[in-house]
Image 1: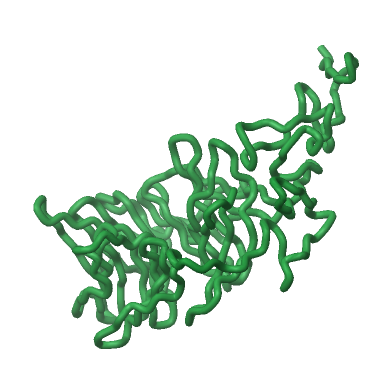
Image 2: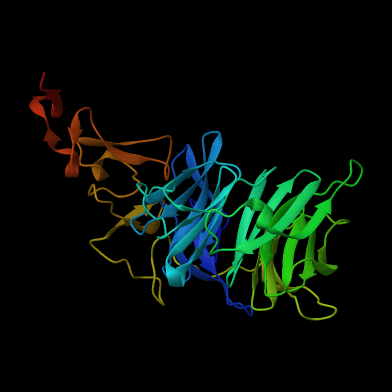
Length: 369
């Protein structure tokens, strides 16, 4: 699963590709972007619950949001460093880093009102905790403690309760120098290996023993002398899947001399048959209603989700927003959204806690004193 957009697309969509390669599959479009809040990339996808977490850019900072089926967003996590979270779906448990501690939540956060501060402390403050990632393998909890030129991977038990950080096992250390810097920007784990990058140019596999400590290390992907970078990677079933310069690759983690295999070539000349935004079905002609509405824009149809307000998640003109009680606002489509005119509220924007007067066909709500 990944977020992407084709040339000419007005918004990003969620796509999938079979793990052994094959045709790209359109899943659904990501509606709800606004001029100041845009989806950037897929942060996490939960295969059982189908929950989708997206990293968004909002003004001058980033946030993590849970995308909902009506095109709106639930969970809101403002930029916090260090921060990451992992989910054990079968147990409905969430592990997260926050303020240098590791917490456990007995639920999977999806709503904006979910409180992430009432979890059980797994590990107390970790000295020098700068930027982090989390990974889980069986009952083991792996913690990335990365600072410029000082990078560590620690291992502990996810069942610890208020355990001291000193009880964590040091699995590996990577130290850079001023002339040869090292900054770990991502990591994942398997039964016997830790995978991590140095900046975005090299992908390493570090084999570790059951009792902790490194055994050997090798470079899986080396892009040091190229113009390519590794933008994201994940481990799954003896393979690393990674993005590099708009292409998706996989490489074996168990072969002695593995070679990267391209699964999707984003620079190919030929195109892909993809449904229009929001449509589904084998012929791309299905738009479930009344949960969605069909909109035509520049000769192209879109199947747009309807929110609880009764309005579409984005709008083209006031006619979609319950005019004259509501209006369509924003710089340009698809970043325009419906909003109620002053002091109007409720479904269709027709409620007024006061009196309504009319002038030239335009209503005005005067609130009660």
